[in-house]
Length: 203
Image (cartoon, rainbow, N blue to C red; front, side, top):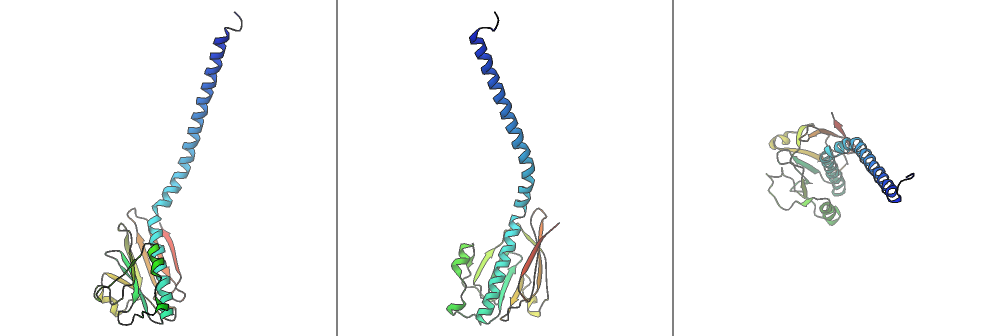
């Protein structure tokens, strides 16, 4: 009979609509897979260097505060990096640290960023520096290079890298390369006059 039974025609149209919807789903899945394939390498690359970027910000932040405190207190401040424990801290000389309120570090601001109040420690442990605030860098990083103009007093602390900041706003020039466990490295270098630190990823 021409046209077929009305119930059969309705079932056929319903099956066609279902098949069309399935094709749409497949197309959407394919599009998502294509977008993921394009975006994931970039996202993975971003994550890959995240610890190095955070470490570079930590060193830069410590250096800026050390320079500011050296000028404000009119005394030398030092940033110390222990390349064995990956602890970084800053402070003034133990015998000269000025506790005046206008020269204190903003500990609350540092704590909000994950730093810790240094507390008390012996001169031998801290290279004669009053450890005022400190932080540990990620333990899967490696300091593969540190260059600066070495002083005689630096030789007494083989596991420490010391960067001194002076009341006139200048500091010791340094260059440091830090590598993560995937072989990616970042190089940091400072301007001893302005204290500005620049960084770049290395191939």
